[in-house]
Image (cartoon, rainbow, N blue to C red; front, side, top):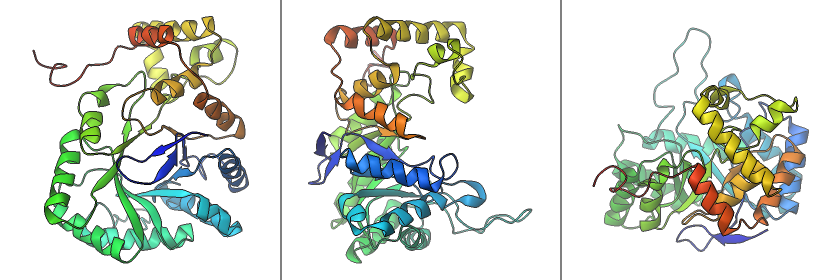
Length: 333
């Protein structure tokens, strides 16, 4: 496994991030533990989760699965850089009853409540990277950073990251943090970024680079679209669903994905591995989140770290999936 610094911090993290969103909803606890064992054995030390994972009435279940894995061995927690998130409403929601207020978003009261609940489920006394899952338009950053300062002083969290933030919010958050003094500010940003979805190149990634944030792309295969979906469909394998199916229903988009698969087939490269390897070549990228449902999917992701894409292939990928270009040129003269 290869490692890099997380943004401007001294923290060393693996170039693949183990995403755990499938743990619980699609992958049972025993298989989830086996995947985490294999990831750690392969050198992946960066594990990402969120308090809402498990979804619906099972919110928090994914953190519990990870906590049970930590409880198996002190070595697990010691070797893991643990990231979780806060924003979604975690209050019980019986049928017909609205969720209680103050159990979501980024108010000081919810941040304090959410951290303690995550620590309990995760069976740990600290979180390495505590991430804001979304922007909160109603809560000023002065309040957010005051709550974060307290948690850092208490030793409950070490660093803070964002997820799904636009560029201007990254700037606003870190400028206010700098004016207040004390907190280091945001050190990472998780954003939607892959070959087929490159809008983050316009402002999010440049803002992250300007402020020293590591960038952690989520959905690196665009919901399976970049994982050889047409080839699997033809061979009778798993068919596309959700956003991937909607995209393939468009003849122009289908032709684009076919050209992508044909290019990689010509070079004997698996599409999913190429999509991950491409992200590892991009400026400012710490490492993509991979969310394996099975051990085989983890093995495929690990091969991507060692895959070197030639300049010919990189040029061809840019021709098939042209990015928007930097701002303001992407939308102005």
